Length: 474
Image 1 (cartoon, rainbow, N blue to C red):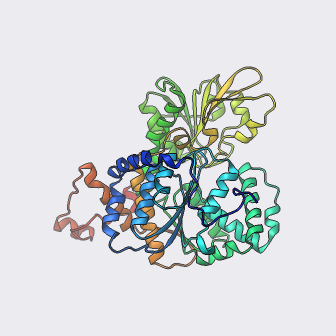
Image 2 (cartoon, rainbow, N blue to C red):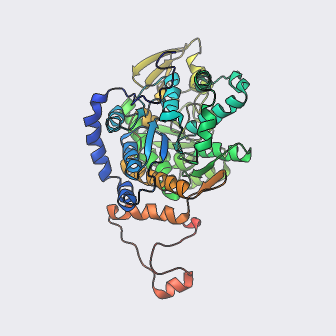
Image 3 (cartoon, rainbow, N blue to C red):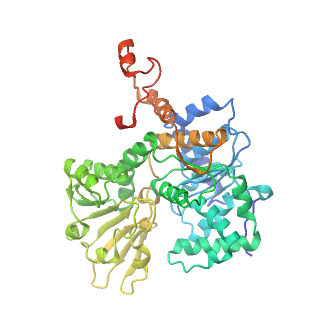
């Protein structure tokens, strides 16, 4: 086997250019100022070392903000290994900065799918034939690799399925190679694995489905639905980072354009707000009557995608579903329409089918920006090959947004380690959600109103401390 075929648990790191480390360190220092939640958790738990010696594997975008998360976990005592959860999202300078500190990082921008799964397997492979005791996951790929690997060790025929999606083909190929090298690897991993904390909507859906099928052998915490994660990441983060990705990729004037946002969930709401703030005429597509009603009440048109193909200038998928924009849709769009995705996976847009259309020519404008020219002459501009545009074409959410998300991740990791649970999917306790919010208030100059005795008695809660509210208030 070549070096990229074998898993080498003693490999120190694999990044694009280790010489970028100093540049990455400068970015990390700036990010720390904008990530007060993580810095406060270091201060609060640093002496206690609640994760001392715990083997933690991360499968999450290897960005500057993630570097601050990694160093927070390290400051609480963890033994960390990391890979990105997206082939385009790594900031190479951040990966280098973490690698030189001794944390094994396996990530670089522009990985192939084969390299991606190799990196994930490397991060899951601790020295001495050990696996992680905890996983920080984003989209569920690390969890899926472990469980599919375990399944294949029990019955190798699970690796002989006729897969169609390119990423699944690459995963099955990687698992076959690993099985040849070590046919008991995933049994050992699952035996030691005490929990997973999941970052995204799509990953959480996977976990709930596994739990429903009684196929989840360890507990998992749904970080995505913490208020301080979902509102910040899915809404506030996307309304800025979507614009950042489109602008860096195309330099297009957004004002005056017709922008079509497919989906008006938490992500779609933020995208629509961002585009409208830039002066775009926003149209929403929806399958859900409640989300459609919300979009209408915000003043947005709600149409089917077929109804707007003749006037849409920018298309953004934000559904978490598949085949939302088809090849046929793209054939009928306006010339030079911009098409991108900010939902988790790359199959919201039919990119794989587009790539093999015989009358379509693919032209690289610059990395992660491609023009697809159809036989009759018109073309569309596809960003980040249908993967996350804000990370593929920009650098993702702002540091302050990720401070909220990642503070939840740290608290989830501590909670999983301290509190042994039966297999299943759990939410972080509400008091920890409030702890995350409190950690960010000083940075914004916020002063909380305190209850008086009469108000406290009326509500049945203590005068001191945060308001122990019900979820509906958010």
